[in-house]
Length: 372
Image (tube, rainbow, N blue to C red; front, side, top):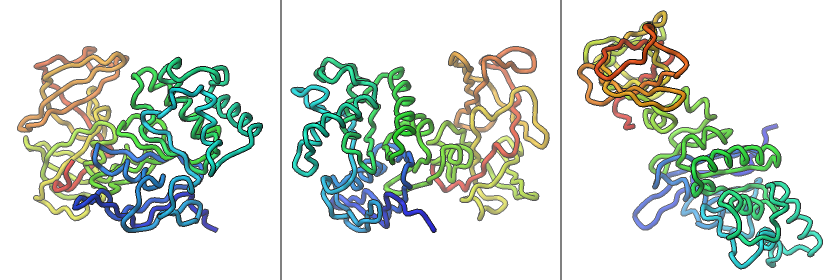
């Protein structure tokens, strides 16, 4: 028997005047998953979150929570809590009072003894049991973020919505909080749905990621699926870094596609789903991750690409090289781990001509009309 999703969106449409923010969104989230809606500003990810939370109402379609239709229900009638981007803590209340506030309002009022117990448990979960009597302004940014998490968790919701919860933190603290958030999700086992524009955050935290574009879901899958097999150039370019190179499709031999670059170099790869209709002579794109290039030789059955180094960037544990291909306008980027070297024992310098090797599985061929 199939397991019923905890959250389901069926053909959901949302418009603001003449602008359609969401086009027929279909999404299923299983109980206990950590799903992230990822995309640039204006793609519809926050609108989707607000519809699930009940802060907006869908124009068309249906939203269900644990099998119950909540499309028209207000937020307080949904077993969902939200952690907002700005935390929205009450400055005149202590940490404990902020966390317990949701258990004092009429719809969720609990006896004082139970309320105090649940506040203690929630603060212990997020490592702030000793800060219960502090005021929000006495806490660091990371501690305020954890108070907001405790306040959302104290009601024991079926689903926790996270609206860019780490965006206000500096880089170091943000990375530390990502680890804490992942551990908290594993410990609680409840469903997390997060919105972010930070691709690295999505890759680190999520069981599945829904990449959004123009009010639609461009692709949904596990982090490794989206990184290794992006369905379109847009997804390839948004999940991690990708070199998108214009070329001409030559045909396929066996299951290996062959394309020609601007300098007539032939490169072998695999066709993505949107490239199945390509015919010899059609314009196309190939996508190659920066770390997939080899600078110490050409792999068996692989392709050799000649390029000129234009810049070298030091990133601590790795070098990033900017290159140009003969006849190509856009630059190419590759990455070399610092603890590895090219054949002659040096890192290529600006002005050097180098040969890059790339294996067919690391080259994805796309139809050119799909914008990145």
